[in-house]
Length: 411
Image 1 (tube, rainbow, N blue to C red):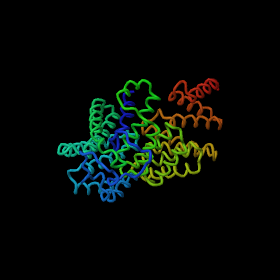
Image 2 (cartoon, one colour):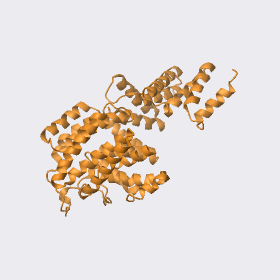
Image 3 (spheres, rainbow, N blue to C red):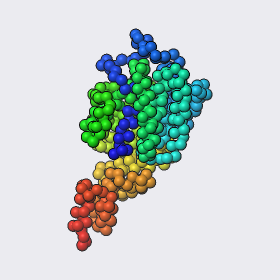
Image 4 (cartoon, rainbow, N blue to C red):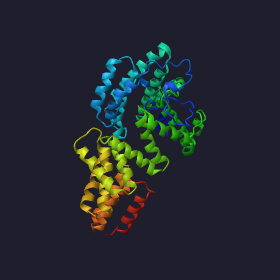
C-alpha cells in the first residue's frame, strides 16, 4: 500500500509538471504571453527556455527521437543544448528523462540506468536551485518540482521510502511556488490535470487513503480529463506524456477502450519503435478482437526483439508471444505454432520475473487445454499442475486446474 500511495501520488508531480492552482480551461485556447493582459509582478518570462519557441523548434526532432527510442540521436541534441546553456536545468532534465524512458519498457524493473537517471536529476536540481536563489524565478521552481517528482517516483518504485518522502515533499514545496506561472504554457496544466483526475479517482477507489486526501485540494475528474486532452493536443514537452496517461486512464480507469485505442494507435504510429507504445497498442487491439492487426503488430514486436532494438526486451516479448499464441490457437487452429508461442511467453515471463502475470498463468492454462484436446493427458496434467501452483485459489484458472486434476486422478 505504501508503494501504491507513492506511485499514485507521484503521477501528479512526474514528467515536466508542477502547477496545481485552478485554471479556467472552459474555452481551451492556445495561451501566449501576448494574450495575457496582466502577468503576476514576480513572474519574469524573458529568457525562459521553457517558453522559447526557437529552442522548441530545435528540440522537436530530439524529443521525437527520445520517444521513438532513438536515444543516442536524442541525447546528442540534448548535449548540444547543454553546451550552449550549461547553467540551465532544461538539458539535464531532458537527459534524465531519456534515462527514464530506457527504464519504462522493462516495467520499471531494470536498475542499469538508475545511477545516470539520479545523476541527471540531481544536476537539474543543483542548476535550478542556483537559478531560484538568484531571483526566485518560476521556471527554476518548475524544474525543481519536476526533478524532485521524478526522483521521488523512482525511489518509490525501488522501495526507498525515506528518499521518496523527502523528494515528494520538496516537489510539493516548489510546485506551490511555481503556481505563479499558470497560464503561460500548456506544460503547466499537465500536473494540475493529473492531480484533478487522480485526487477524485483515489477517493473513489481507495477508502483507506481518504484521510490523507483531506490535506489536499479537491479534484475534478471531468476537468482533469479535459485538461489532459488539451495538453495532449498543444503541449510541446508534455504532449506525449499526456497522451501516455490518457491512454492508460481510458483503458484502466474509465473503461473507454475505444478512446484508449485511438490514442494508442496515434502513439504507436508516430513512434513505431517505442516498444511500450507498440505493445500497448497490440494489447488493446487484441482485447477488442482486432486479431489481424494485433497479429501484425505482435510479429513486428518480435522481429524488433530479435534485432535487439532499444527498448524491445522480455516484457514486450511476453505480450507479443501470448497474443500470437492465442490467435494461432483460436483463429487458425495451428496448435504447433500456438504451443511454441505459449512456451515463448512463459520464457519471457520468467526472464522478466513476472510469473504472477496473467499471461504466464494463462499460457500454461492454454497449453493444458491444447494437450487435453490432443488426448495427451500426461502433458495436460503437468500443465494443469503448474497452473495450480501459479494461480490464486479463488481464480478461475485455479478452479479449472483443480477440477481437471481431480477428475483425471486415476487416468
